[in-house]
Amino acid sequence: MIAIIAAMDEEVNAFKDLMTDCHLDDNGLYLGKIKNKEVVLAKSGVGKVEAAITVTRLYYLYDLSLIINIGSAGALKDNIAIGDVVIGSDIAFHDVEVPGWPKGFEQDVTCYHCDKALLAKVKEIKTDLNCHYGPMVSGDAFVCKDDQVEKILKEFPEALCVEMEAASIAKTATYFKLPFLIFRSISDITIKEGNEVDFDIFLVAASKNSASFTAKIIKELDI
Image (cartoon, rainbow, N blue to C red; front, side):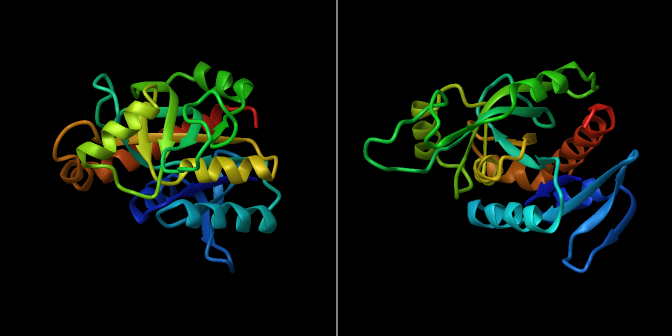
């Protein structure tokens, strides 16, 4: 079974609308299908702890073959537009501060890496959406202040986007030896002033893009 995890109602509902035979189980999780593949859809809530709890619940409740984290994110590059999809390659915590611990994406202490073979298959699937492949960062804060952005870009200059759950999901999936994919659609441009307003405006549209992209990948991947 493929697990889909999203943090917010808007993100969950966008994917639920694409499922067939969709129903709630006794644990408050949505069960259904995308094409002929069984999926379980879970709302994690916002933040790292909630995301880790959700992966753990799903691991013990279902025989999972893959975890996909979907939803929205804020862009950290000028060439990434609202509505674009970012496919995560390396996912790092930007808010872990321990003396001597490394930063960046070329390390395994606070950074987790999607399976390269699985990513290669995803890249082969054609979509109408504008997609970007690369690293992203997570932390327990909505990033909208200049000092937040400056710190992230100084320590993680290659990061394409920032959000709040992906690294925790990647870390927990890695612990349980489960393959994972991270798909995020851009709801706001973090490096531009007023991105918190854009987030409120474009969250639903970004959620729909993330959901439709994920459904297409599930249909076409041999998983």
